[in-house]
Figure 1 (cartoon, chains in turn red, brown, blue):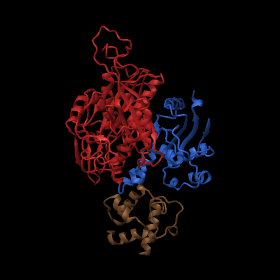
Figure 2 (tube, rainbow over the protein chains, first blue to last red; figure 1 turned 60 degrees about the vertical axis):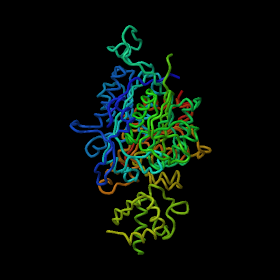
Figure 3 (tube, rainbow over the protein chains, first blue to last red; figure 1 turned 90 degrees about the vertical axis):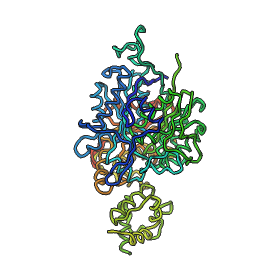
Figure 4 (tube, chains in turn red, purple, blue; figure 1 turned 180 degrees about the horizontal axis):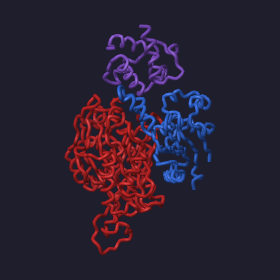
Length: 383
Length: 86
Length: 164
């Protein structure tokens, strides 16, 4: 099976716009959470700074910014007929619902134009697992042989629409969220954009020849600028077939997705499982059940929503990028907000940073509509 | 109280899309949740919470409190009588 | 390869009574989910063991408009009393979820938004979904709703052997 590598990343988050800034923030437990006035109920969120922004759409702006950074790092020519684009977002430009076309297809078209992508983009809209599903879609597109590179972009901005919706579901906490904690009482919303460029080759176009992004067969005389051999090994999406907004009590879909990606893989190989960990009573309990059923009860678990909040369409990509960088740095990031085990059976989650020398991890997510997804990432050795 | 009970039944049927049901089909004291009841689920509880606020100005704190109040239409009616602000 | 469709504006309640009749949750569904639910019934109603849990069938729903009809309903309710029952349907993939729940299909389920009805693109994406080793068949549907009484829908039941 063709290997698929991540050769470029881009981030726009309230705690930084580069992987090193963001990693440092997570390690220091630094977030951008605060209480905001709502309509009228207040809500606790991690939002981006829109100060001074005057363009037509903040959503389009952050999606493009993250994507451009990833494309630049990857050193590819986005206008090539061998480059595809996948967008992940839950509500896109929903704030404009009274005045404009809020179809996600319009958002994808805007993004493609901004990047100069000539192939037709596709939007993966799979609730909160969209980012993960979009990455899996990118992997499949490369494996189909029709593309050399896929730009996968996830973005979400918060709005009255989304916030009041979650408030009506009583899913939000007015306090910093507490993944897996005994006193957890709900999630916090977040905003971010994150992008990856996936490739069938482990090197960026910039690697050997900074000036010729289409050079797939490098001239070895020039100095390398970027090399990455993080692989997305495989992924799976599975439905609980149970309820459209409540997770399965047996963690059915999550367990089945885990089982699929871990076939032939030992739990010992994993540095950690980065989970959904929204800090709702039901989600975290469901994940605990799924992890235990999959034999992962001793594998370190961590959750990032205590720093970023729930960034919805961006989550799968943002949390995967941060996880890759953490693994590179030899750490299992702390789970901000956790202090006392509040799920049964327990999972190996910690509020402290831990060390690891392992080079693979699983990204796990769940979402409305009964969907669950798992992706296996592995850092390859020299071939 | 009877008017209120009937009114509540109509509102519940409407809010929860209980197609084809009439107030006569709902026993005053029958459990609304669970298999013996109307088989309502977690989203239905949340919709009923909205129903109380929208029609009677009552704000419940949480879905957990909802489970108490929504045991049956009779229990709901009694709660509304005591707590309504409109 | 079986293919079905539901003409725009058809009475979904009538179709429900004709094809199903014993699934009251149908009435809580939004238009997208009702369409997906009914299209699926038309395709698999006489499949043996149809309610046995299975992981080998994907549910892939495509559209251009996504759930914009539902978005409008929720946005209306948001002005005074935001409705949780409306909010849960403001996602294009809930229809896939409703199909999975009804039929006990625990395989892959997803929703895609495309710029327009592009059959070649749809089949390209469906073929890619079969890269999942477990997936042996797929419920594929184009469900494009511009309002609660206007839509374009067509659906297929595809086996792996139809694809390659």
